[in-house]
Image (cartoon, rainbow, N blue to C red; front, side, top):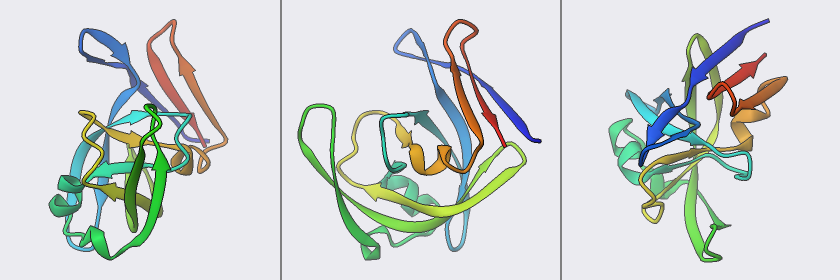
Amino acid sequence: MAVIVYRYAYFRRRAVPLIPIGIKGPSHWGRVWAYADSGAAYSIFDDSVARLIGTDWRTGRAMVATVGTGAMMRFFLQPVTIQMRRVRIRLEVGFSAELRIGFNILGLDVFEQFNQVTFDSLNRCLIFTR
């Protein structure tokens, strides 16, 4: 059993489940921060991350998500490898030029690769069990 623990990071003076992850496209690895969001069906990264890892993000399958304000956001799915500590996961994630919220989103598509995901607010940590 693999257990991965991340301490919450501070964003705008508040402890939040913002974690560092590795992401690999067709040609490069990148290290980025992503907000763990259990209400997001898909992981969505800013288009600058696609450029960092060598992905032509606009060639992916077009999707639309409703964001917290009720607005619609277009994103494109692309295959990547996500690395969380020593665990690597191959899946499709979204890239969008419309994200513009200050961080990337790690959604249920990643959480479903684990047996359990625990948001431990008291101890300010996020625990992934596989």
